[in-house]
Image (cartoon, rainbow, N blue to C red; front, side, top):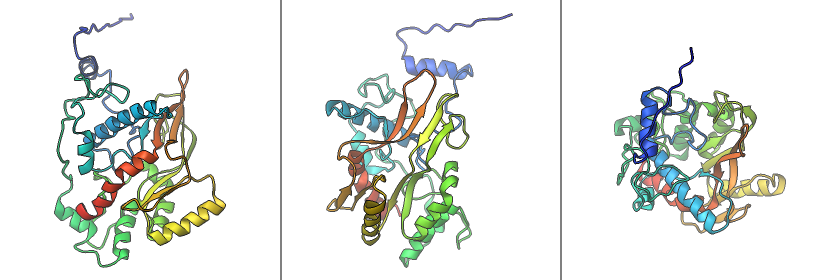
Length: 309
């Protein structure tokens, strides 16, 4: 015998929140997908960070409409860090209900997404000292911290580096990083200090446990992406090689005060780095690299060296 069940929701209820809770209690709605969605890069899955990133993307999408720019989804830089991003969001409504909605709506979001002036690190100071060392005597000491984070090998203090100042998730790198682990180790051993990355993906099933996302029956694509700190000398050498031999590689390099700001793409055009194809739906393009966002958050990226190391 087949039994159909119907749920009637009062039209005056806060639709997104209340209906979601009912479905979750009935076991009909999972709170989180099995794999993090593609706009949740490794090391930045703190729930409050995710809310901030989605709110920022909502604002940038509105700006894109005003400037007649492509409306391309979540911006990969926004925001992985803490203090200054709070000022960026301080006038926004406490409860946003999605990246496509109106951020001034009081029906927005989850009750846990309250406003905070500062998000404290989840790792104790004594644990961080064991991971990073009591003091840094040379650049080699810095590189060791980054390489230990990628390799998840035990350092001289007998502990693993499970977090860096630019991310708050105390679990090391994400599983998909294993696909490019060897390349990332080479980068960090040679002074290219990586803080965010993703491997290239060409038509992987959306159910793939490492790189899949979205509904079943779809196919996922990614451009290889690397976000890093690098010395001026290495940056200039790298630019010569890329400009001469790899014109299809896009880059954006900026120093701490913005006096050096060089890119080979269009100044206001985002570049999609993750997209998906699903049955009966438009191309989903959830993650982009946006030069405007990159400039907006570079101050925090550099300040983190001083404040959080």
